[in-house]
Amino acid sequence: MLDLTLHVLAFTVGVVLIITTLSAAIRSFVLPRNEVVKLNGYVFLSLRLVFDWLTSLRTTFGARDQVQAHYAPVALVALPIVWLTVISAGFTLIYWGQGEGDLLECYQLSGSSLLTLGTHKTRGPVVTVFTFAEATIGLLLLTLLISYLPTIYQAFSRREIVVARVELRAGTPPSACTLLVWLNRTGSLHDDTEQWELWEEWFVEIEESHTSLPVLSFFRSPQPGRSWVTTATLILDTAALMFSAVKDSRDSQVEVTFKAGCLSMNRVYRFFNEDLRTEANDILPDNDPIEEASRAEFEQACDQLAEQGLALHPNRAEAWQQYRELRGRYATAVEFMGKLTMAPVLKSL
Image 1 (cartoon, rainbow, N blue to C red):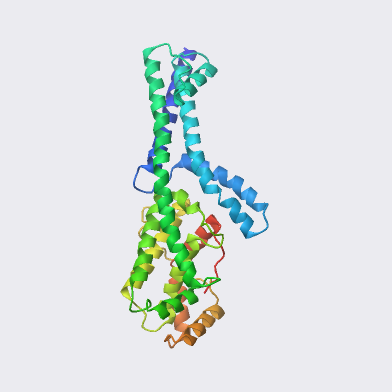
Image 2 (cartoon, rainbow, N blue to C red):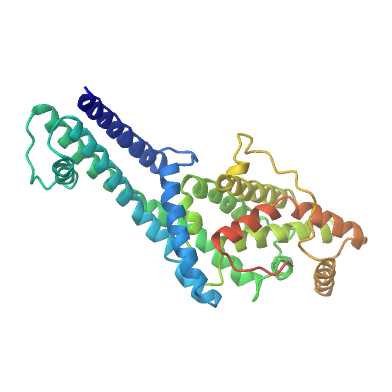
């Protein structure tokens, strides 16, 4: 009786492992919405500990960036390996539960079926059905990942085009003040909204792609000084500085872009922060105004804008308070994502 109970239990556990793994694969690459997959999370967190340790051995940002650049690709390749390992373990328990020999023989049968080697023969029609099913699942999981690799890299490429273009316009080191001056010089500050429409679309795609395919958040830019988090911060800082410091600058398209950026960054932030993962993802956080940018830096930015001929808000104190309030809508999110992705430190203004 005890032996029968153990075999039934092993069979049941094997089925649960297989269903859990298939669910993880489907929710990772097929389900068109953002869901946290715990099995994938364990893989990413385990590898992150290893890469964080390797990063701690490097002394310069360039060296640390070079190490972290391998994290996302390695984690992506590790996913199907873990999935296949769990699937193999599940079918091993199923075969053992059906009396196909000891655990070693069942593991060999499982491996032969999963890798379509055909080196082990079964002893019954029911087990044969399971071996065919295992071979099908193995091919399905590998095909699923391979077919989604182009999707992942296309999203990465579209993201990095905007990152590179903003870097060219924001100066070296990049700053919101420099980007705002460029917008004013090219006419994109008031009369031309095409630039802000492009950034709005970029934010919308960031929200969709970086929550449905969260590994994208950790793919680093080709150049060490670039980061999608830094770019998002630059655009939002520029809009906040424009609204608060520049006179008569409330353009409707810029406001929509700013809102899209705040929503996008906060939703990505909530996805990666388990404590804040709630159903009300469309509500902006009610953050208190922060002191991230010092008053002296704000004053210096305003002086630079005035030198470039921009008409500024007559009351600097009110402008400063408005800037603090606007930046409080997204500062927590961008700071969290910056630390999570090890983004370059950005000049405040």
